[in-house]
Amino acid sequence: MKLRAFYLILLVALCVSLLPGCSAFAGKAAIGVIETSGSDATSQIVLFDKDLNKVSGFPLAEANLNSVFYDPVVNQGILYTIPQGYAQEKEARKVLGISIQDGSVADYSIDQPAMNSAAVSERYIFACNTLNGVSYISRCDKKSNQVISIEEDNSYVSYLLVKDNKLYSFSSSLDGGESWIDCYDFDLNRIFRIETTEYGSGVYRSCVDGNSIYFVSLVSGEGESCGAVFELNTATGEIKKLDVPDDPIDVELYDGKLYVTHGNMVERSDYSAVTIVNHEGEMGTFHFNHGAVQTVVNEDGVYVLDSRTIYCHSLDGLKQVGEASIDSFWNQHYYISGLFSVAG
Image (cartoon, rainbow, N blue to C red; front, side, top):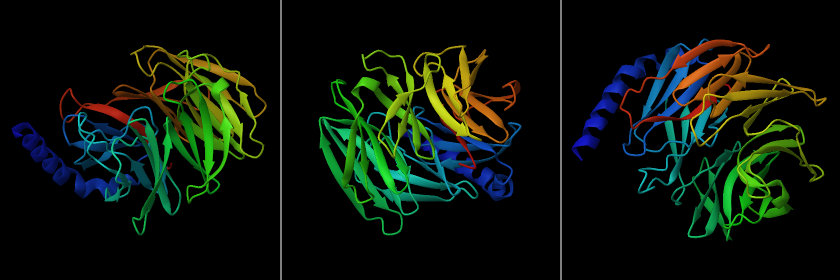
């Protein structure tokens, strides 16, 4: 208790030091990271300009804020992310909506523990969790805070995505033998299901381009830990595999091109790469001498997070043009759990 009280005092001190500058500097920010801990309810959002100079930050009294497996969701200047609570308890039952401009926070209460993925529309927030072999998908109305939920037995819902006024959920059976994609309307009525067992499971990231959803499966259809990138045509239901190198962990879209990151989400590595694919299917792969767990692509460059270091690579030729190490304000129990573009 004394230790938690100590960190609470530190958090208050950080709030006082950061708040005067939040509004003034948020406009310069290009990217941000989430720093958090599973043992202390103290986290922070740190914002950087395009050259990786720290410009501002928002402290938050939350534990286990976001998971590095999920790209934080930014929509209309609001960062949506899930605090699971203390690692052993997972007591938090909400999604946060954090204003990147001024650091104000809205709590959206959803009475489900250990939620993982969140997706947002203009009116709703969607979140999922799995408890005792049952998966729950919940919808929270941003204005009324009214929540509805559906259940699915013997399933693990790993990822949610909103596209064209529909909700897509990526799921697998608890034994990993089957996988599928469900499409729902916003009242959580299922419209259709696409079987994806042959394409693998373990989906945590995606991007959207027109009728196409590009997603990464971290586990193959044979149950091996070797990822692949797939394209789902939402108009036809057709799925096809992209011919990219091994070990993809992330896929981003910018200026009509796909940026596929290759790396290792589990073991620390000094190797990673990014493959760029254009609409004609032409591609080039660029190798880096650092690891990768998350990637953001915007007009300023390709930003790659490796543990506590952000690397910036140019859009033209992916040459490294910047680097910033993120020193923890707290202690060694804190880690970076998310990288995001301020523009969304």
